[in-house]
Structures are given as structure tokens and as C-alpha cells.
Amino acid sequence: MSEPQDRGRADDGSVPPWDPARSGDQPSGGWQSPTGPTPPPAAAPRTPPPAGDPWGFGGPVPSPRPGIVPLRPLALGELLDGAFQYIRAHPKVVLGVSAVVAVVTTLIQAPFQAIYGQSLEAFVGPAGTTPDLARLSGVIGGASALLGASAVVGLLANTVLTGLLVVVLSRSVLGAPVDARECWNAARPRLPGLLGVVVLVALVSLLAFVVVLLPAGVAYLAGATTLAAGLLVLGMLVGAVATLVVSVLLALAAPAYVLEGTGVVAALGRSRHLVTGRFWPILGTLLLTYVIVLIIAGIVGVPFTGGAAAVAGAMGTSPYAFVPLLISSIGSVIGTALTSPFQAGVTGLLYIDQRMRREGFDIELQRAAHGLT
Image 1 (spheres, helix red, strand yellow):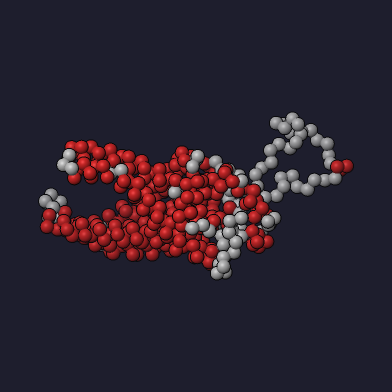
Image 2: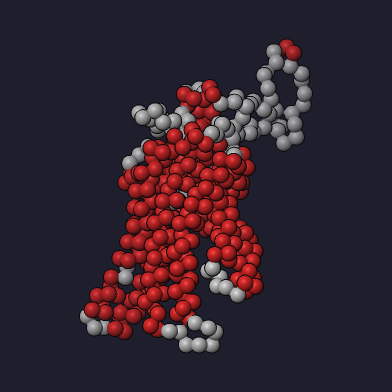
């Protein structure tokens, strides 16, 4: 379904993520009145008000929850729980898509990783020996190839995965059924522009870091090396903070672009607007999510990394040989398939939460869930 008041059905026939017109296809389950139909006044039993409700008005009415989260501004625990719940609700679609993307990414990156590992071993040599400086260029070349391939492949994979998972998440919030083919049809028209959003966010974040290093470069060119060194250290600290601030301000650009149908540049402005005034809570949520992802990836990856090292030692081969590299790659695929959906889920729910807080979007979602638009 397309997002209420933001998007309609795409001109090319693709199915938008949130489309209230399709609400009749959804199950009517979800939120119901907490007390059921009101009986006629004459038949209504006279009961004393419950404890904590001295006026007898029935107490606070629970927020409607047709899907994975209640339709109201979310607490931190509800954000994190919702990111897990949409995975549990649709494991075949979410984990299946993540696993396919992770496998393709690993297959492309593995040859570059093996080349880099072999060049590094040739440079270092046996234990206790001096590194062969003549092979340093090979190490640099292998590292450059690995970093370049990882950046390009990771960028493409992250774009596809984010587009698909945001669509799944948006439907999970409304309790709508999720079909892999329909989600692909909904996300596909937005993927090229989403790639532009991801690239632009990366470039703006990089620019925020580089700009503050310019004074150090000017001082170095002027021959003031001591001043340049001091400015370099200060610039790196300030640049790290500036990059963090920019990254948080633009963190919601991807879900805004996919779900609202805005332009690439407009999506960045939309994210900045939603984050402004809630910077610190969003920063804390993103940092906590990153820590959780690192812990999960470490728990999953350590056994495979240790197993790869043990196999390499038993076979007397390099850790970058085929069998050890295959074992470690399997661990990487499993870790990525488990953590990427969670991270994308938190980001998507942050976007929805900010709209509910600032724009009363929960009312629109309730109408979409009940087919009242």
C-alpha cells in the first residue's frame, strides 16, 4: 500500500508500498474496540468503576496495533522490538532477501579478499622475518582492489536491500500481507533514485570530514609543519563529529525517498526536517542499534572465524585458501543476513515514529489500516 496522502498508485503499474485503496485486501484483524459493541442502555449492567478509574470512564484506551508496533509515538523498546517483530512476522521474505543479497555480495568480494590475503602473506613472510618492502606495492594494490570492490558491491547491495526491506516494514506496520514479488514490484521503480540517495549521503558525509582538514593542508603548503600537525589532529576530531552529525541528520533519507515518492535531494531535506529537534534520541537509538549489530555479528562470526583458522592450521594452508575462506564467508553471510534486516527495520521505524510525533501520521495509518480513506 502507498503511504497515505503521499503516494498513489505508480504510473507504470507497480504497487506502491502503502496504498489505502488496497486496504480491502488486508485482513480486518488488527485493532478492535477493547470493549466490543456497546449494549443498549437498558441492558447495560451497573458495575462499579475499576480500581484506578474513579470517574468510571473506562481508563485509557490502548493505542491501535494492527501490525508490529502500536500506532502512536514509539518508545525505544518498541522501536527495537518492532525491528525484530517484522523479521519474525515475515522470515521467508526478510531473511530470504537478505541472504540472497549477502551471498551475491560475498561471492563477488571473495576473489578480491583472496588476492589481498595472498599479497599480504607474501609481504610479511614467515614469522620472525623482515617484511619484503619490494612487495609493498602488491599489498597496496590488493588492498585498493578489495576496498574498491567492497565499496561498489556493498553500495549496490545496501540499496537493493534497503528498498525491499522498507517496503516490507511499511506493510508490517499496517498488518498487511507481504508477498516477495509484490514488494519487488513496489520497490523496483525507486531503486535507481535510492542509489542516488545513498551515494549523495555518503558524499555529503565525506565532504563534512574533508572540509575541516583544509586548514591543515594550507598550513602544510605554507611550510608551517608544526601548525599543520596540530591542525590535522584537531581537524580529524572535528571532522569525525561533523560526519556523525551529518550522518544522523540524513539517516532517514532512504525510507523518506522510498515511501514518499520525493526526489533525491528532497529526500535529504526531508530527513533533516524530521530529525531536527530529536537529534539526540535518534543518535542514541542508532548507536545502540550499531552496538547490537556488532554483538550479533561477533557471536555469529567468531565460531566460523575460529573454525577457518583451525582448518587452515590443520591443512597447513593460508587462511585465505579456498576452504578456510569458504568457512569464514559462510559466517559473514549468516551474520549479514541476520543483522541487515534489523538495522533497516530500526531506521524505517524511526522514520515512521518521527512522522507520528511531528505530523499526526498515526491517524493516517489508522485510517489506512481500516480502509477509511
